[in-house]
Length: 457
Image (cartoon, rainbow, N blue to C red):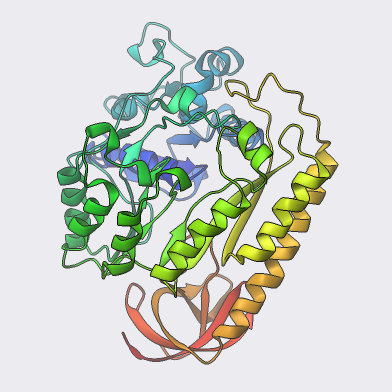
């Protein structure tokens, strides 16, 4: 029997990427071969994102492009997986009948081998309602992978994402994730440590811990040590070099967590805490709570404990009813908080959310204008922070040649997360990809920095 060649397009966030890697692990175990170019694939899997409208539009475009390959006969089988399947399975099946061979929801990742036709010769067929793959799945996901789950990394060999929990118990009125990802559920600490140790033995030196709310970790399991305890245990995995925590929730951050992050050797000085807004009335409507003042106090607690920490957040503009005064409060907060990294989303009106019955009354053009204003403020702050770093010598994880020129290497500091933050451009010296180097910063390049390698780290 010929080997099934599989191509995968993974859309959306790092949590979705881990789901993709689980599917890749099952396929690898079944003997499939992976190809980078969809034109070379027998089977193409599109792992969709269903979070907001723009992400869904990208997912649909990608599916339709893949369907063209299938109709042209270049592709034997098309599989659609992920968040959109979990959230809109019936609608997708109705609209894409004849274009898609199988749908795989969040609780069905282990069916990917059958969905891809890799357990039998792939067949180009329309939807078959008699197959278990097409039985309606529960709307709320309950799946959570573990250390024994097969997983093939889609990241470079030296870095990996580790999902420590799934789902969410918060009721933020702009967010639909709990309506399809389900309730918050943590992995046992023993299981997370086992996976981290296995990854480290495979050569992974940096792990990025992810969840919908990482600081809530363990509470559903009545694990009093929580995230602080997990970090302490992960710090004992000897082959790891960097541990980065993503997606802290301000209402679940404790003094014990801040102290542990500050005093645990392998936990890097990086605080990723989506705050969404700063005006108290807006935060109340978002079902978040807090204010600019409480946010600033929390950021100051982190800065006192971790003076060198990079602070990252995400914000939403254009939420229903956002007034000019409320936006001005948000802009003033951005100027005062001086984040190292900032992302801004325009509000997306989503069914299944608490805000869906509200009037989406901020015009799209005004949403974009407000987003651009915040990003302009942040650009000045980020560029000034980069200027202040010139002349310092830091530890950098070297990641290889620059994708646009082989004359430069690129790497990241501990204060730069993969995919979402800036990079260090290395124009002098050499180090192998996946190794750490001491780098003296010499100039800025927008959100990136430029430096020369001065030795091994």
